Every structure is written in structure tokens, then in C-alpha cells.
Image (cartoon, rainbow, N blue to C red; front, top):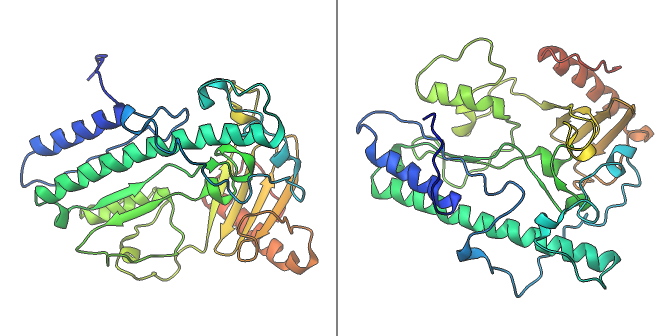
Length: 326
């Protein structure tokens, strides 16, 4: 509360301990909201002692797109600074590689060091989420508490040969969202509706019986949680990434600015700035986004439709920094 405090321990454990203490001391019989936010999955991974040697005796499988050559895409995919092969630093892999390793072997060595530390950190998060859920059950709070597990974005974990995020490809664009609410949600149910993080606030406000301000841009997910898709629910979502410059000066990883729209089946991406290039993917046939079909005559109508949708969403969200030709 305005003062710097130094504490000993592993931060994932400390965050969970503080959360449980707060729940224990809260005014009983009153509604509450707790944000228990873990930083451990954020690079650079630093596992705790308990998990430090997990996976020492095995190799983690590489993603199917690990050796992607970006052959059908705009130059933005190949001209960036976030590859496993070339851009991880010593603190990412916790040491220097053997001098005799080169090529694919060196790339795999870096990946194994990188991914194992990530999974070790995640194991600690899993353990601590379990502690928090156990506390809710032991305290009799589990039946009437909405539990939301989510993230601020996805992440490339060797997919397309990359780490980090930023690109509109699905590994980065999609994010986990699990919700437990016994009074409203059928256990084990799955929805394929398009929801966004701007929907969270309206959902929580409606659950609490409060009215959402008109200027909010999301929609309450309450009908979806009950298993119903309301009329006129969104069929697409808008994305805009704008940071670009020198590495370390607001241009992290040299990912070019781009905007785009994703529907259930298709994705349109427009790279801007010092390039003007388009990509289009049929996600039902190409879920790994390896084949850019923007210039394929078979998809001409779908491309035109998604360009119009992109222009419409930019107008709706008042984001007209880049003018797209529909």
C-alpha cells in the first residue's frame, strides 16, 4: 500500500498464500471478488526448486510447425526477431550451448531448455490453483462462487519456430477461458461462440446484478454460460497490433503492425506500416495457417466479404488509424 516490501519465497506460492489469507479474513456473508494473477508463465521462466528437474530425462515433442518456412506469407512472418533458433538469449536457455551443436540440433537444444522451464513454471501454477480450489471447497464457497481461469493472450511455444505473441496467428490470438459456476454452467460443457476479453466486465456486472455503462464495447456472456447463443451474437472479431520500431524501443521482436478479422472459419490479416500485404486463411482446411490463399480465385468472394467486415469493425470500435480498402 505505497511501500516497498521484500519477502522471501517463490512468487507463485506467495500470491496464492495471500489470496487464501484474504479469503479467510474477508467479511463473511458478503459478496466478494478476488483477482489471483500469476506472472510465472511470462518469459523468462524461473521454476521453483520443487519442479526444477521435471522432464530432465525426456524430450518434449516439437510443434508440427516448428520448422515453418513462411513460404506463402508476407515478409512480416520471416522478418521478425522472435525465433527459437536465433533470438533466444542466454537467460532464456540458462546457459551456453555445447560448442559442437549446429543447425537443427542447436535449435532443438534451445527449444528443450526453453519449453521445459516453461512447463515447470506452469506445473507450479497448476499446484497453486489446486490449493485455491481446495480452499473454496473446504470453506463451502465452491457452489456459489464463479471461478474464471483465463489469460491476457496466447503464446507461441515453438509454433512457427517462434516464442512470444503479437502476431494474429491463432496460437497467439486465442486464449484459455474456463469458467466454473455450478448454478449456471453445465459441467464439462463447451461453447464455440466467439467471445472477447472485453466481454468479461459486462458478464461480471450482470452476474452481480449491476448495469453496464453504455460506452462499454463488449457483451455479457451470461446467455452463453447457460448454453444459449443469443440472436445477433458476433460472428467475427477484430484485432489490431501497432507496436513497431527498434528492438527495446517499443518495437519488441520487430513484429510489423497489422490488423485483421477472424470469423469461425476464416481469417484475414492486413500488414501495414512499411509494408502493405494481405493474408487469408481457411482455418477448416488449414488450422496451422501455413497456406495463405489471399490470391486464390476460389476465395475471392470470402476475401471481399472479410474486407468489408474488417472495415465495419474498425468503424464500430472507432479505430481508423489505418484505412483499409474494402
